[in-house]
Image (cartoon, rainbow, N blue to C red):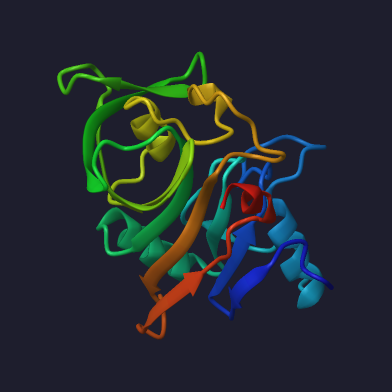
Length: 222
């Protein structure tokens, strides 16, 4: 079976894909597809597995975002990878296109953020606010492109919509992200891409690094 998305790595313990835009990681109802269900169908047919196929989601990407997404093929791998993410042992590098320009070419963002379930978004709040969680990332500007900038982000915490919110709250929303204040749209999704990921293989205990090329819809802006 041809995989429904580019596969970056595959063995008995892991499946690593380059997720396309507008595909939810999981948790959507039919007929809308999810990366998890498509990956399960691929594994089931590729390896002729009977019954239900186990795949553990150890990280998520917002539906409009693109890039590296990791699934665990066993519960042991899932537990070990989840621990790596929780202990911040995973290196997560993202590339984004922002509207406007950063005041500094490199820096760190630290905020306290909170979910707004009613409006399905996040807000920056005070540390004392009920339900607030710490969010931190570091960034560096790679290239200025007229009214846009290409920025590399290393995510230290993994809060919902974190990169989207932290850049938007500083007046530089991600291109295409109308939910968080962007003025311009992309043909598909938003300009948020999980570019590079480094983690420890859950069984072989060796470091693995993957890179995923940015989507073709970015080319007119680069």
